[in-house]
Image 1 (cartoon, one colour):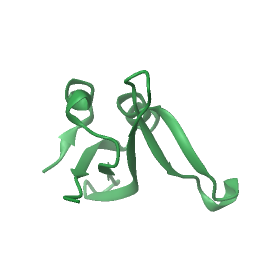
Image 2 (tube, one colour):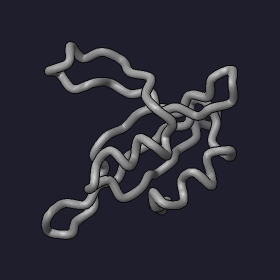
Image 3 (cartoon, one colour):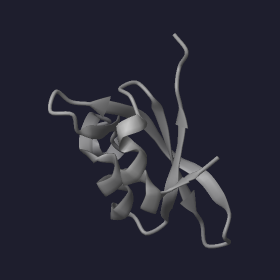
Image 4 (cartoon, one colour):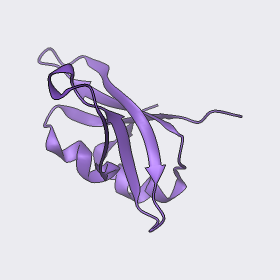
Length: 88
């Protein structure tokens, strides 16, 4: 199930640190795929961030990025997210 990017801000309070986030993108042919994967990270101030690896051209560093809902609007092709929560 995909959560559309225009609804992510409304469900961020339900996400937890450690949730696996898949960024869903749509290609030119209208097909959907998981374009990027990272983890949800809630900081001490309660804000949910997207923690992910940078591209190899950026030294392959770990990035704690903007709020998840804001991150999705950086790329026009990003259409939403998938969430997986580890049980243990």
